[in-house]
Length: 301
Image (cartoon, rainbow, N blue to C red; front, side, top):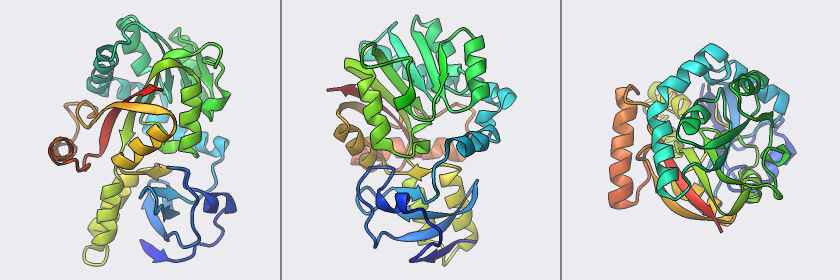
C-alpha cells in the first residue's frame, strides 16, 4: 500500500544527514514517504538537490549480500543465464571502450556478478578483474581464471590501487546499490590511471517513480506497479542529468552519455525496448532523459 507522510519512524539518523545519490545534505524538510519495492514497503526520501529517490534504511553489507543472493543476478544458474541475455549490452560497452582508445587494456569490473562481461572482454584482449559483494559470484569468477575480490565498497579493493591503477573501471547495473555514490566514484577515480576511463551502465528510472506518484490518486493500482517496476530493489534512483553532474563533481569529464547501447538484449520486453527507443529520441533531440538506462563514458581528469 502506497502511503505518504512527513515523518517515518525509526529512520536511521545517518541517512537523514545526506543523500546517497549526490551526497548533498538532506534537509529536515526533505519529503519522506513509503514506496513499494521488490524488498517490500520501505521508507524513501526525495532529494531536493538531485531529484533522486533514496531508501531510508541502514546499509549493512551482510544483509545486502543475503538479499542479492535471493535475486536472479545473485544465484549461479540464473546469474549465468543473465550473462547470455546481456551480450548485446556487453558488446556495445566494449565497442565504446575501444572507440575511446582503450582497446586491450586493463579493466576492473565493479559488481562483476558471475563474470559475463569479463569473459567477453577477455575475448577482445582485455585483462580483467572483478569485485562483487556476493561470495558465490567471486568464487565463480575466480574459477573462470580472473582475479576477483569480495568487497562491499570499492575503497576495500586491493586488485587496483593508487600505486597500481587500471586503465578502465566498469560499473554495470551496480551504482544503484552504493550507500554513498560520491564516495565510491572517488574510489574509482583513485584506482584509475591519469586519463583513465570510467564506464557506467546507469539505471535512470527516477522519472517513472515521479510519474507513478503523480497518478497515485487517480490510478492507485497502476501507480503501485509502475513504482515497483521502476525501483525494483535499488537503494536509490536518480535522473540522468543529476548523475552526470555527480560524476563530474567526483573528478571526471563526461565524454559520452546515451541510452543507445544500454538495452540488455534484443529479446528485452517490448515495453522496455519502446522506452529505450523513445528515451534515445528525447535525449538526443530535446535533451530530455526519459529512458530507463544509459551508457556513460567518462575520463578521469
